[in-house]
Image (cartoon, rainbow, N blue to C red):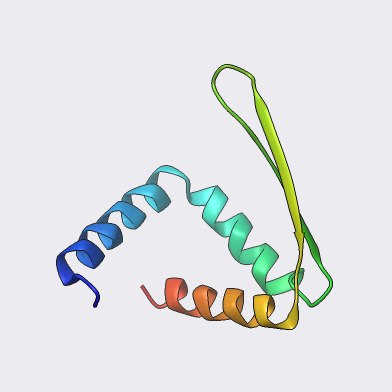
Amino acid sequence: MRNPAKLYQLKKQFAAFTARHPKFMRYLAYITDNYIAEGTVMDVTVTNAEGKSLHGNAKLTAEDVAFLQEVRKMLSSE
């Protein structure tokens, strides 16, 4: 069962994140609207403050695309 207090806290944290990083969220929205399709490979590299990097990727299935579209709709309605 969902915890409404936790969901509210997460909503506040998401709003703060988008305020701190507005270009990042616009970038994700653009990618979702223009580049996400079945067979798309999402390739991510994360570098921490110490300069260490971690890299990973995933080839998207139709189910993945549907999920990402639903998340996009949910986030854009906030």
